[in-house]
Image 1 (cartoon, one colour):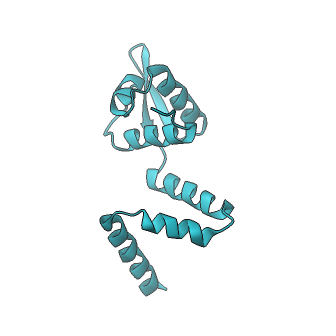
Image 2 (spheres, one colour):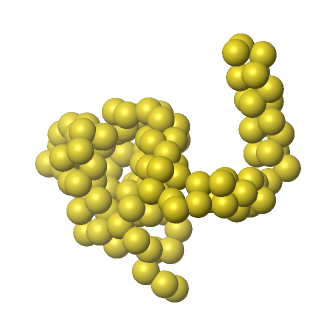
Image 3 (cartoon, one colour):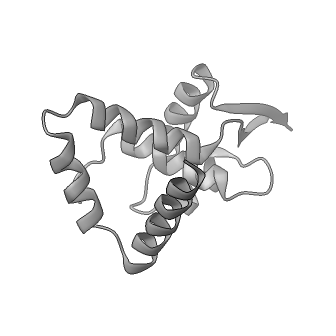
Length: 120
């Protein structure tokens, strides 16, 4: 299995935390990630996310547990905007993005665009 990039691992950890109802330990997070991510790797990712103020941690016994403090959808959108703004051909990026959508995702995007047009 190819190694995942740091940004991808951060996004996966954030997604796990976004789906949790409460604080999670690094071990809990590692179990929920695909690909057998090591506990120490999850710990490193959590420390970086803590430094970025995207998660908070609390003591539970002798260990730390973590939960998301940021809005996951806002973070994902900001990453998407960043890639789009840096692209030489933003229209091409959007074309590839739209062609990669599932039918459900496409319907949701169409509904949002229609709603945006009616608000304008």
